[in-house]
Image (cartoon, rainbow, N blue to C red; front, side, top):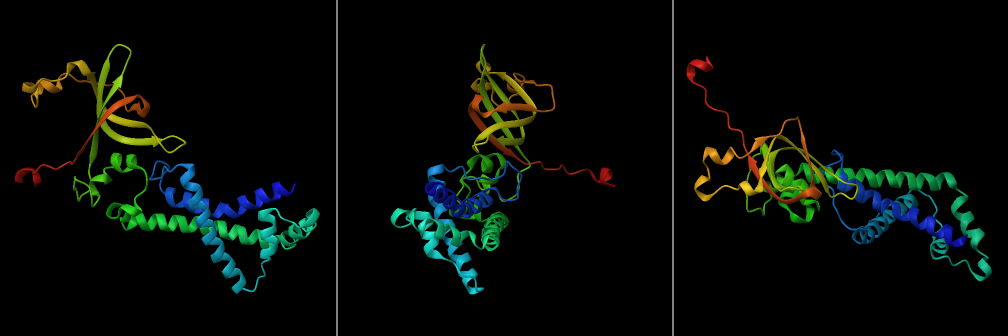
Length: 265
């Protein structure tokens, strides 16, 4: 019983740190937005530190507002030490539950604050483009930056593009039972799996050809080199990342043509 109480209380105490992490990495963006794909071993230490900082802030604010906090009872519940023959167990639990309304308000308000702080920090980093100019603010998800074209706006990127790109050509090799095929198309969307890893990519104006039909040196740039592809009928082509062996990304811009003066009139 004592161990279960300590475990549940520890989870309740650490939850604000994980809420802050999740809100910061997810933000208000759609579900395939930047998210840090860090391992659990990396998230736990950060969550503990963040939870400690948040509780110090919230405890200080509570004391300043005149609320009393029984730190000795909190220590006993956390460590599971209740004296000889667990004589202080009921006393410690009673100290934490005697003002249940205040305890619930403390944790509920802290959870809301942690989530709000995470969202605000996420919006600030994205809005001020800090993740593009400073590596320390960059989200740990290279697929988002690569497939959105934002990687070309990084201050340390070898490709420097100041303007927003208009589209992304994706070319990849997919293995089939009879042969390997090259697929290409314009990226219109992409999605992650539950672990935050790239799961599938949606292409439009897609086409494919056999990898064996690779162009020769003298065919590069000739109209015949593109005739090897044949269009794939349908609105979207869905490619799973697990089936792609190599990927090539090409960013492009749409430049409007200058109309003749008589057409402009």
